[in-house]
Amino acid sequence: MACSDGEILDEEKHFLHEMAEAVGIPDSVDDLFNQAQTADLDSLYDQIPKYEDRFFVLLRSYMMARVDGCVDAEEESMFVSMEKRFEIKREDGELVRRTAENMENPESEVMDPRIEEYYQASSFSEPVI
Image: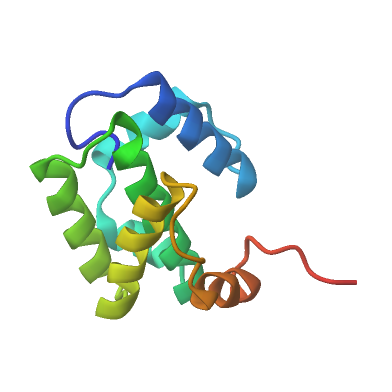
């Protein structure tokens, strides 16, 4: 989504770097942007078989789109396409939007318990030993 508006801010690069590091992607941020510009959603979907992981990729992507303070029409269109292709439930797509908006406001409502539930079921959660 960061590439969809044609402008890649330093905050968006930093955000992508954090995400790549979290999932163990060894490529540089510039390489990731180049891949993102040519990748299609079908191949991305195939690489992320777990629903909870796709949910968090969509959430992080939407948060990255909001880094510059707004989600423009192209970013919104990309969000809708990702939501559809990733087979994200409508209520979870709404949860992504609400969560991203609420994270910008420290006085916002308490986080929806589904976020924790999805996180625990995702590949991003460290196993409890």
